[in-house]
Image (cartoon, rainbow over all chains, first blue to last red):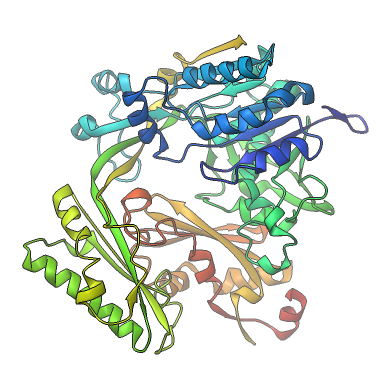
Length: 462
Length: 112
């Protein structure tokens, strides 16, 4: 629905899913709990696409976020009636298969006239060697190393797309837009460009929409979740997921549905603004470069924070690429040590594991093994001082290595601590820790035109 | 008087590769100069000396009464490569709020 203020058009854009694994009821509550026009949903962490690549290789009908189907099944009959449009990166590596599954559901549920858009062009894996040959080194942004030496270990490589293809899908009437890799901020910005007709050079407006997207992209993290003064947050269990009331002049209000828990204050929004921030003057997306030092926050009412004054600069000639590659194996396991001298017993247990592995000829470099005594301040060593005597402590051990067999051997040394270690050992469950592939992250840059010239948007009706 | 940052500020942290970032926000405009003057990059590096192996960078956002710290080489490789329980620096904000600063008594009351 559209709400018309005194004179200016306003649209309501929510975020119902901050990451794959977020609360599954949140987007349903957001849809049904009050007025809303668009819901964005994020499912792709940095290495999620490598998991989807495995799934797609095994079964060409997979390779997308299957959790999204669970959500669609719950809400499909009411989506059109409520006139709410869903924008998501749940398409992963196989947005067409995701669309087909949604169309199957629509048939099963007797829903007609549903238009689903698919955005493609982010997947660079089939083009990697050609791109390198054409003079794009895809250097690691953190280390400066070129991609060529490890190109055969690459499991996925996707460019981050911006808002433009989503705007196109909306223009073609899509009720659901399925993307693969796309910035989270684009999912909030696209409806604003679509509804308000913002242009490519409207840098301040595009920056405002981008910052709106940044504030809501992690779901409840701007409505009371992960807030420092958690004791001030009412009914956190029922935290409302965030809604941006966007205006065509670029100012917007962050809020949530009435009757939900959590809170929206200058402090909860401010904390989310600085989350995962680098240089605040240059927040770079495919759409715009936003300046966080220009933002003004004002408590406009209860659970309403107005954001204004946002300034932006032109977008950059490169797009970010997120690749993942196989970088060896890891495993971790834990036991609980209880009773007198718990910390001393935990240290002895760790020493036993390392010595038994050494006897078996299995050693790890110091940087490839981890030993943490959870309960003693292990997350923040040197900052929290644990008391000398603790009633119990959790020993957590981990290793990594290029050889799976070494990591597997490590996994066999945890259980013996129960009978051949110090007394009071418990909490060993779930069997031997198995070697897991380390899917490492490779961030790079690529010339914008290499990606944008190949973006495809198709909208089909069930 | 000497207080923990948690009494006059709030914070949030997350990861950027093998670095963590900690955003620190003063609770009132009067308290912003206190954190800007006392919570320097050098002090943050010393506070996190057993966590952060690289340099600490600081950015200022006076419009949000905020400072942003980047703690390089703090996550044991970062993301999926890290063996740490806190591979994403989620707890680092809670750690920074333990730092002590000197504050005029009147401001602490004002800031809660």
